[in-house]
Amino acid sequence: MRGRVSPLLISILCLGIAILYVPILVLIAYSFNASSLVSVWGGFSTTWYTQLMHNDQVLDAAWLSLKIGVVVSTGSVLLGTLAAISLVRFKVFRGRLLLTGMVNAPLVMPEIITGITQLLLFISMLQVFGWPHRGFTTIVIAHIAFCTAYVTITVQSRLQTADRSLEEAAMDLGSGPVRAFLDTTLPGIAPALASSWLLALTLSLDDLVISSFVSGPGAGTLPMVIFSKVKLGVTPDVNALASLIICAVGLCVILAGVLMRRSERRRLADTQLAQT
Amino acid sequence: MNATRWLRRHGKWFIIAPPLGYLFVFFLIPFAFALKISLADTALRVPPFTDILSVSPDAHLHIALNLGNFKYLFADEVYGLSYLYSLKTAFFSTLVCLALGYPMAYAIARTSKSTQSILLLVIILPFWTSFLLRVYALEGIIRENGLLNETLLWLGLIHQPLQIMRTTAAVYLGIIYSYLPFMILPLFATLEKLDHTLLEAAADLGSPPWRAFLDVTLPLSMPGVIAGSMLVFIPAIGEFVIPTLLGGPDNLMIGRVLWDEFFGNRDWPVASAVAIAFLVLLVAPIAIYQHYSSKQMEA
Image 1 (cartoon, chains in turn brown, blue):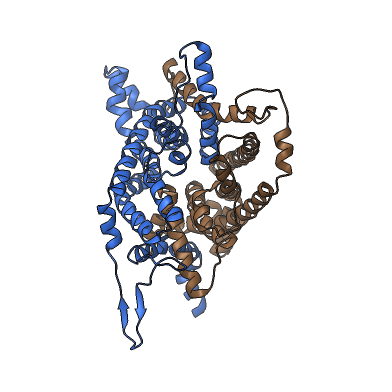
Image 2 (image 1 turned 60 degrees about the vertical axis):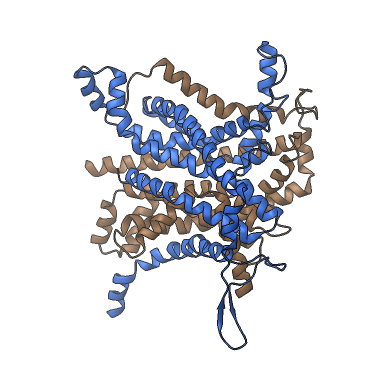
């Protein structure tokens, strides 16, 4: 759908984008404020960033979050890709409806409910099996569950538009179905997998509510540390920390977007090639 | 030979079973545990609730169900009121998001393909940025000596700072600000696919643009409207971070009640009962969302 865009629409669009971005930009600007009073501009300074580098609590939490994030995004890309293949390629199987539901529900389920119910499961499992202890393991398990849902949706939409003619050709030439998939379709959707890996990483790094429920004593992720600091009010070192995270997440998302576009372009090129 | 045939018939389960099993165990089964614990009694031990099932010395299985937690939800009006309050807050926030998000999605859908991908990235970026950090950033704007008050004072529009923090208005602003991208993305997805020739046909047949919008664009974008609204409405009901950081003591949303019950009072059975009752209320909107999002997926 293209056409003339009325000035009114453009101004609403600009207003909306301004609403989304002004608070973040102001936050970043104030993280370079030399004054420790959050409302007074005392000149440019990187004091708060230096202070952050010496804050062990923050550094430990950041390291824990990063470790969790990498394990979670790898696990959820594996599971999510399998789920996407199942939903796109196998039209009929027992449990299809169940899988569809479980893939879509985490997107809308209030995190607080997911968090409580998962904690109750972990507690009961610990009683019966003596595993898992609350902390790193439980946070990873809980995060993989909701990140898998996001990965599945992303990969699913990419797989649906993937051209299958190459794969069929490979099978005609004697490849088994798995081999054919790995040789032809997988390289085509690889950018989508990389992009969903990054998105799962950001989701895991950002999560506060689910982590708060399922984590145990001593395992505080970065958002949990930030939350306890923020409850006490706006402080300049949190501004610096928040700016760093926002920039890191922003880079991940932009990279993911670029990868997605590249994969889209490759698909278009493939289809054109197939038509000539 | 038999092995190959078996593999061909059942091999797909190597792909289906891991995600199906994982989500079943770690996403679906937990709800059963919440239901179980909501029927238990509070106890002074670790974990802080009684067993429902127990085997007595004479090898009889005892089931001790305790519906008291659910009765308690009805008896103490704090739960009912916070449910209603959450529903109301989520409903009006969704309306505002729709009113702001629809024209935005519409405008993006009408730009050229290359502008579109940039604008989409601009919308998606905050979508992925931490809720917590964005709510915190918003606090920097609306607090007493924040940018908004400073600007209004400077312009001479107000003479003393507006009290926005710790009010209902702050909760609404927080939800709208945080969830706006969730509304725009599904709306854009339907509006982008809209067949432009239909609008031209309407114009050729003499219908003014507003009429064509009401008769053609709006009905065709309904799946996006509903998916976007549900994507805002359902998580907003359970919102915890926003009412805690921006709201005052009056803004008692159900997410906050749950959190306090769990971490403050350590009453896990009642917290589970609240969660289960909350979930029951969410079944209908989630079903509506599933229906429309799967429709969108097929289109």
